Image 1 (cartoon, rainbow, N blue to C red):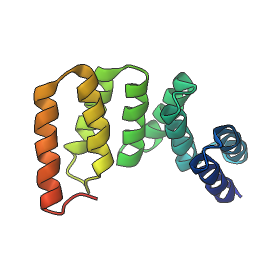
Image 2 (image 1 turned 90 degrees about the vertical axis):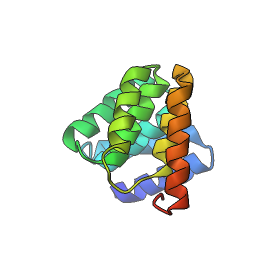
Image 3 (image 1 turned 30 degrees about the vertical axis):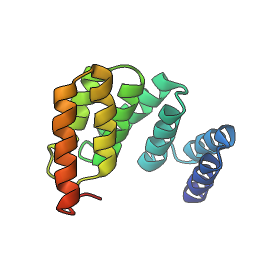
Image 4 (image 1 turned 120 degrees about the vertical axis):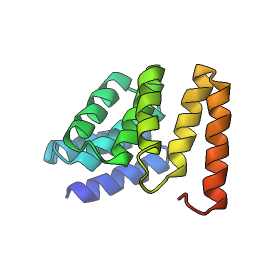
Length: 142
């Protein structure tokens, strides 16, 4: 049932029916308040809409405390921190993901780029862009 509700919430979100999406995520969490993927996705979507950012941070933090090594969850946490204006913390999280050496995801670089831009860290932004381009050329990014 939780998976069905999560899929429904994702569909509502993609249809830009955010109120229905968030209500559906809350319903899924009532059924299973420990489903890390549901909590993570809900936190991410809240952040994307700049909605209930404190709640989104609390949820994302709860998720990474239970699954510290999951780069998808860490990305959500870093993104929520960025949206809350906690740029130093957000940059640290994103740097840890990128430097981890796991499978690389272009979204990490996108999020990190936004953080660096907001910090006005042009030098690091340029270096990160070059690193991303190199990974794309080598087909090491997904």
